[in-house]
Structures are given as structure tokens and as C-alpha cells.
Image (tube, rainbow, N blue to C red; front, side, top):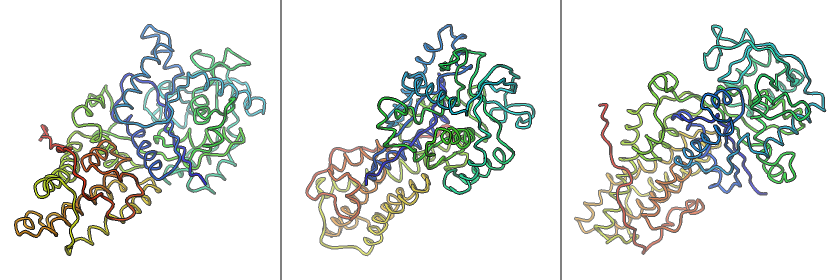
Length: 510
């Protein structure tokens, strides 16, 4: 049976100013998608942009352009950033795409015909930046509980989705499917703070602005952003279109990765919509924490904002990917600072990996003219190294199955740390000096083979680094199937030209 895996990130509000926090979700999703592909899954990785709503219309007016012109320009910024971060998505969906617009209109009409959408009047509190409605009791100090900004009282004719109708069914599903909302703290929050107190019917259309998808049978209404945006996960696969091949193949989604501030929409509103459409629910929604600076949000207005491309330019894309994947506990808030970034860069990338690869290849060049050989003698330290290396893959798989990305990455780096210890234990320079050629061949081969296996395991997380290591080794055995046993690095080949992959950098703040 073919193994398929459908992973999504939320579609992002188009912004001309992305910060490092915006990159976190997508880099994590990319590493998971790459890992699953490496493990033999047929993966579909979706990301995109959420382009409708009042705040977009206001931004366009301020810029003196149409909303479509405004989003067209800023979307190129998002795509460029994902390209700079080596994001390997299969589809970038825009909510202004014609295929998405048609699907949303059909979904709206289908729910209306079923009686799950009805017309009424909305009077309530609305946060424009978050595009969220709130009740008085949900506010924090009279302001939006998500962003802390002012909310406005709005009153207008609107269509409503019968969210309350699905309350009991939704609660039963969540309680009988413990894996559906992760981590557990998010599940408890959704049940205790939102579902059990009682779900109110949801406003799903607006008439106070017109930048949105028109309701086909009542065109003074445009579809409310959350019904619009959430539907991207199935519209991207061709749901209700003339070609729904991808939908039949990949739905339900295996994993929605979202920030904790939108878990409510993905674990309450979205599942209820799917239930109303008689569609299966995604297998899991994982709500991760925020990336913060000194305990606070990253914000241009606070002066702690930097375009991520500046970090990439200074330290390289894999340094940024590594920091995001390694430093942030998946599911909890993580701290970003330039000091920590440089420390991780120097300690883990420059020292543990970069120096290891460079000095191993240098010794091979010095002692055997760059030719990979295998000795007939062994050392007392070999088995410990080999056992650790060949058992790492299983540990990585187990960690990734639990979405423990930092732990998986640490298991891989343990290979490189163990290699450095192995050099200290065997002292190749002493073996060379004493003329113990067969032992020297063994030691260098074991190091190179361990580095090869480590690089293959590293591919989903730091693809450029992994590929450069494998290029320098000049190996053709780069597939995951080649690491089940130790000793698949080809003999008799000569390594390619090499130079340090990571160079230490000075921390100017020290």
C-alpha cells in the first residue's frame, strides 16, 4: 500500500515585512515534509497566502492601489523568502486563485442548502488585525485576547454557520481521538475554554467591505475570512472541482501545523465545517508556540525586527534553519536572539560538524592522497561508534513520529559529536607517526562512513549542508536505504575538493 502524507501550514497574511517568527512554522513543516519523503512517503506539502479581508482593503487604499495589486506585490515577497529558506512546498495557494474562489462559493452554497448557514444580523466585537469576532467575556482588559489591540463594535446583516449544532459531536470526537489536538495543553484549552462553555453560531459573511469572495446568491455579502481561508486545505486539492484526483488521494490531511493563536479556528471551526460537509477530519492539528525575543513578541515597532534575509546573508540559510529547528521546543514558546544564534552556529555547526568534516578530509588527503581505503585491523573504539551510528535512524524516526524535531536533530548531531570523540580516542596522527597504516585506514574509513550516514540523516533539516558534505565525500550512496548497515561508503574513490562548510564567526555583542 502506498504511503501518503499531506502536511499543511496556515496560509499567511500577505505582508511586506516578514520577521524570523513568520519563518518558524514553515521551516518546521518543510523539515517534516522532507523527512517523510526521505522515508518513502508520497508527500504533498501545502502553504500559501490569505489575501481577503478588511485589513487588506485598508492597506490597499492607503497604498493607492487596488487590493489585488497590493496582494500581488507582497506575495512575491513571501515566495522569495520561502525560496531563500529552501522551502520545498508542492503548492502555494492564494485565496484569490480562481480555483479557490469557485470552491469556496460552492462550499458556502452547499452549507446554505443543507440549512447549516442562515441569514441574520451580527452585532459584536471585532478585531480587524486578527479578523476575529469576540464576546465580551473573551476580551482581556477590554481588548483582543490574541493581539492586545482595540476591538470595534460592528453591526451588519450577515450569514451565520450553525457552529453550535456540532458542539456535542465535536467534543465527543476530540475526547475519543486524543491524537487530534496536540500538544495536550492545547486540547484542554479548546475543551475547557471554548467548547464546554458553549459554542455560538459563527458569522461567515460581511457586508461592510467588499474585498472578499462574493456569495453567489447574495452578492452584497462576501465570505468571511475564516470560512474562506480554512477551505484552502481542500480547495488546493481540487475539492468540488472537475478534477478532484488530489483530493481523493491526499484527504484527510495528516498534519496541520499552526501557531497557538489560531488553534481555535483549526480545531473547532474547521472540524465543524468538515462535519457539515460530511468529510473526514484531519488526523492531527499541532499548535506550536511563538518565537519571542526576550520574552516578548517580535515587532518592527519595538525595534527588534530584522528581515530574515539579513540573517541568511550573514550566516547562511542552514544556520537559520538549524536555529529554528534545534533551539525552539516544538509546542512551546522559543526565544530568538543573535547571541544564541551565533553560539549555536559556532558550537554545533562550525565546531561539531564543520571542523569534523574538514579535518577528517584533510587527514585522508595527507595520509592517503584523498583515496578512501579500508583497513584490515580494528580498534577497541570502533564498535561503540558503529553501534551508535546504525541505531540513530530508528531514534530519529521515533522522535519525528512524535514531532519531536529538536530531539531528532540532536540524535543526528550525536553522530558528529561521537566522531570527534573517536578522533580523540584513536589519535590518527599518532597512528600515522607510528606507521600503523591498517589501523589508520580503519579509523579514517569509520569516520568518513559515519559522516556520510550523518549527512544523509541531516538532509531533511539542513539540505545544503548535507548535500555539500556528500559532494565532498564524492559518494553515490546518498539514499536512506544505504544507512541500514555500516560500510556502504565506496572504496577506492577519491574525495572531491573541499573547504570548511562553516567558519566560526565573532560575536560582536560579547
